[in-house]
Length: 143
Image (cartoon, rainbow, N blue to C red; front, side, top):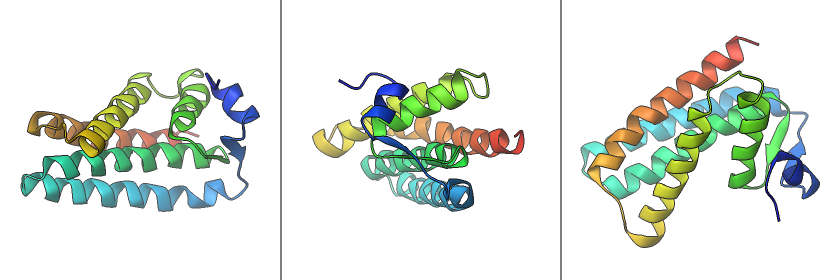
């Protein structure tokens, strides 16, 4: 059973990725594009799709951070574990960011698979996705 970053590495769910740093800008661009599309969905009152798009905005922000460390994920769970190991443990980002990534993943699954979503959650997550992108950019600039 995969429980942490080391398990993810052993299972091949996180792998070294030499081209990672070069792809950081692309991932941030995708995160911003997904966030902008989510804002349009929110304005159109399509809250289900908004939440799904917000998750992928955060996913691309987290992937950008992982790429910057020259790793690549093959699991959404392991992406979260990698961010925890590479950025939270050393104090580069607050645990709040991996917690909101986990929460947003759960809300995305509820919206996508069960039709369970709300305007309140979409609105809350829009703000968090913007914070996530900003934190990813700031974190890389500090290196």
